[in-house]
Length: 250
Image (cartoon, rainbow, N blue to C red; front, side, top):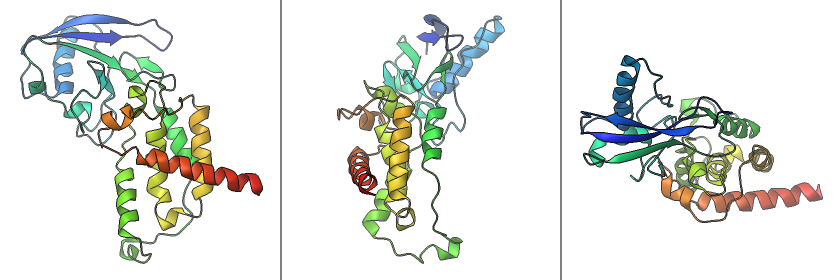
């Protein structure tokens, strides 16, 4: 396959940035999207140029590092997968592909396609820890948990914190991410003692980090590689309202 790449290049957060054009020649159809970028980078380096910088780690759809916007869609138009799981057979010979970083005020660009998403880490850290002793593996069934609660918690815990939800939202809202991270603990009995404090701290930290408000247009749900339901946003809103009332009367 021979392709034309329109790639965002930016030296640092304070650089203006621009789109540059690259030819991607003789790309195998079985190659992944990141492998295609590796091939292009080998050519760039061989010619003495600066390679395209992009984030990656596991390349198995687990870590959430591969935060690329492909043709205007975070992780590409393919549903339920991350950038590293996109394969070149999904494109046609001669295609022009636009590649940009996830764009949000809370995700400053480090270089080229690499963004700083440590704001997510700070939100998670603000939630703290659970105080209930969970024991070892043999104690897993010592606290009965309703099947529905366990299922919802497990689904929410699938969030890999990639940031696609933020990149897709016109307001750069992190409500799907925060809702998922709060729900996977708040739905379980072990997480109930800190539930109110956790949800207040995480939402306030989200606002402090500069994420926008949710306007319920569900772009976040549409691009989530783990297909997390926007129901976690509704639950987060309910939990936050309840916790705020309790805090006000205490």
